[in-house]
Image (cartoon, rainbow, N blue to C red; front, side):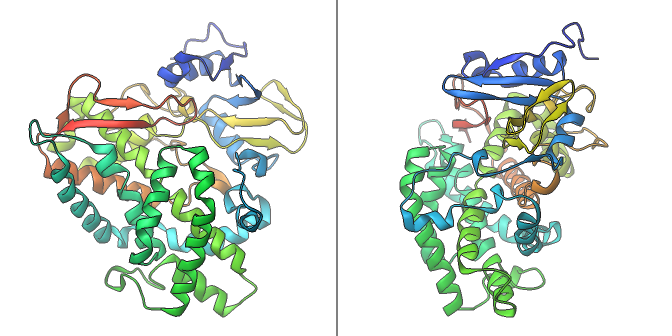
Length: 415
């Protein structure tokens, strides 16, 4: 049961505190047990409210009084001709968001993800073949983040979206920039990213050949095909600007499995009994991925929402315009929602209420089904191909100093 001795106090969490960087789960967890709302602050940052508990966080993420808007994101400075392509679906709300999501959602259904599994397996097998070639000849060590986890999502999403093979090398560079969390480099890459999305759309129009037809789900074989078909059927459904914006955003947002795969491997290596259970019973993999996503998912804080009106939020007055986030790292280990939540358990029975690593409500992660299958296939492939996979020793993983995202900067292992 939670420790309620500090119940009723509103903790003030300094995001720049080294302890937050080192172990956000512990710091955010203590805040959760003090009360359902905390205050987050940082130097040069005005601060925002944070909802700490699972049920309350879940409610926040679907509450129309709290809106995602342009201010929710740090938009890079871009040339004037790129500005029209900067407003993505992620920062829209209400009917505008719903319209675009409905156009894209069929391409990301669980059924389509399941049908795409053989192609993901082929990509994983190829990357694992290459991974062995990167291992040190002296001791078999290799950086799994650099040589595997960073490449997988881009290969999968390019195939999924329908990015032509000749365009993919440049997109791989863009994906590496995003995965590294490099703000300045990302801003500098924006003109090329927009140009690449335009070229992909134009080429797909000129060459309407079905990509990956042998593994295509029902309907068009990729997202570009879906969207172009929809636009041709009814030109008012999707403008050219919306099409290009959707393509670049989906491709780069599709890099989110990189930290999830790396975190999952790191967690399993740190819990050999859980790794052994997964090796002994591969059928546990789907449930294990859900548990790993709950326990060590990369999302620590949700995208900030802004109060559209004055709101009383669990005893706290939130003024109109105030920013509010869900403390996902705290909610996912809330003992009110999960039994023995601090324990990683690949045999955990699915709880009645799911974790919040993929969000909840209108902005639930569009690519959740794809991310789950990628992670399942990646872990299964690694465990099958490298039965002696082990940490490379002290300092094998390097954790980024980021209070909002739980991610690695390196993961050295021995194959």
